[in-house]
Figure 1 (cartoon, rainbow, N blue to C red):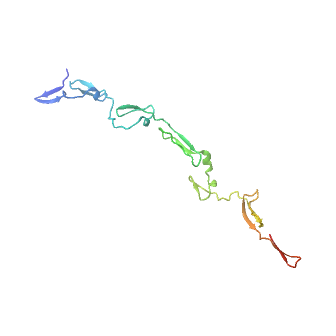
Figure 2: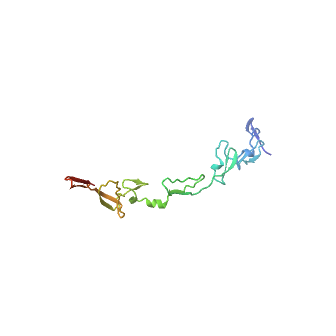
Figure 3: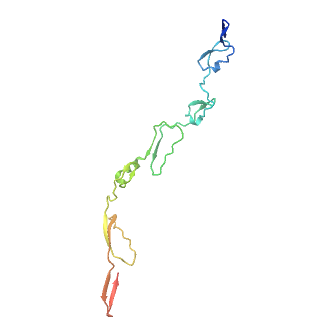
Length: 191
């Protein structure tokens, strides 16, 4: 026999008759008594109100489950684990794939390009990615000195093939020659 109401000395000590508790409203594994006084064990498996949750399946890892808005959701978000990327050009970019990342992935500058970032390859006074340049610009320079004589035609003065620059170009004076001529005067030859 179940007891659902206790009166002692005219006072009601316990009255379960108006209670609305039922096993499906009590969390799973918790015991209580219903309005008849019978002992019940809860069967409800949810532990919070999910009606205002905003999670979407694309925000839950693939294969994992969760509850939102009163429904069970199965995730579709891709597990990328440790993604890796290489940037090999100055304008290179790495597009991070959508999904979950475990935090151990890395994006780096290509090793071949990193090897080029040495002080002697960078102009003095310039710092690139933390490497301060030490190149003065005159390394391996083989200059040539030249003399040219003006002419009526334009001239482009370049170093000879075995040189890589000009250290100095001397432009000679325009040739000027006076000679006596048969008429008793002077002939002036310029150039």
